[in-house]
Image (cartoon, rainbow, N blue to C red; front, side, top):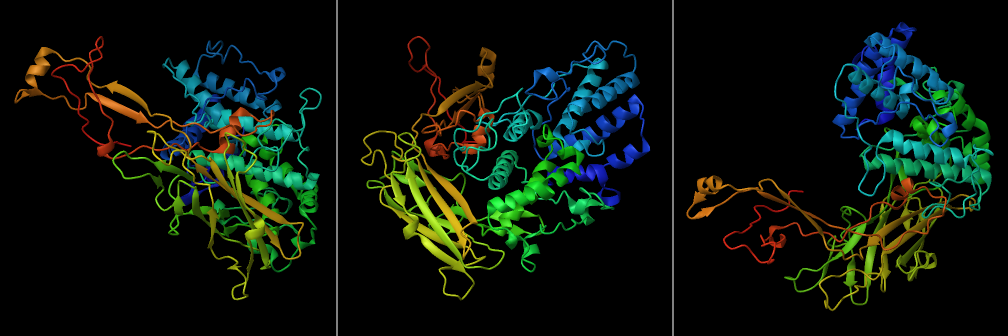
Length: 628
């Protein structure tokens, strides 16, 4: 899938064979400095919005939610921007489409006073709110023309995570703004009471910087790295690729700045001592002049960081720049400076500009792990004993004692080809009892390795995938190994594999990562819903379908069986954590699973309502296995 930034970039700048619309947005603006209301609608609604909505539909992404600009600063009611009688649906003084377009154009221009990512009409379409406004304009035009309008609703994922871009960014943008403590006395923002579970910073909290035990420079880097990670998880919910880092300072010109021609030939200028790609520092070693992450963070924060924002009007305003994914492109590039300075569990794709993390469980056979990172116990009444899914997830399994071996796959990369110490820790948790204290630990002292150059006699080679086995004594214990009950689950709920990488002689730059493998405990019965496609049967219908003394009606009833699940326990959320972000922090809760074959199909009966007994002469028969 083409990324949002690349798609919008082509809408604005591309020409010829790379163009999506002709004229592109930039050329149209140059040719129409003072457009009529009709011309404004033709371009922004009929050309730009229509093309964007086609892109959303083609990629099965949530529709854009209309945004009328009444609350440009969502957390501040004092900045309410009410609709005038011309645009509130009464259309006072609006006699023609040209009048309507002019009124919409005038309101859009006035929004700049508070929605200040709209400071350059050329780059406005990079903001999700541009599309929300144009969607509202489109719906208002349809109402003016007398059409019945049903506006798109906010789309949520199954765990309640907001998938619609503008409503999600209303929260996500505020969290970034509050971390910078920009509210002052009007909006006092507390220090975090603790880091966000699974992270080192207060990402996802309505909290200001500080309070997490890091120096200011290091926290600047780590908070924005984790903020970027949460945004990447949000993109992944709808199948979108992560944002690639872009040097938005671009040698002091902004992005695209001095570039001309089509986006496919643009290049990023150097900004020494900072680098634009993984290979950029191996010869000059410019970044090695920084002594630790705090030093590096201060250097970039008080140097190129601000310039890259202010040279690009869409990501300059701290109140609103997180409505614009190019913010993530800039901070992805900034994070690359630390990423490439440290050893890391990832390779980098020079063509896409994306990281490819290799820190993951694999099957005991070495094959890729299927589906969610979870293991569930399968109890089939027709089978001799319990098994697990995925098959081969654990070798040497004994569900009575809980013994078994989990295999993990890693890759270690270092820009300077130094010998790297790898320290791995494995911890088993029963979150329902205590989500912070492990019940079994395989310490780093017994899982420490040297990763170095090929042929050097080290344990593993740099830039080469390898696996490590973790053998537990009781991690995989069943809560009913004797099969005394119909339902079964694991005693424990989670295995966390944590890794640290430290290059020789550099204890100040330690890269950390972790991975959780869930052990399914829940034993909730599936939820069953029935939908009648044919719910009444006349005597004539029955007679006409009669064949050999039996009338059959296929597809009369649809049976929907959904596997329910529940989290063993909520993480120890700091009070400042935003509810809207929690699903992205924890990920989906895995379920125990359903059999998908016809042999395990649900039974179905037609019962007398009063007697609760089968109706004589009537029967139900499932005609197929599950359709999904």
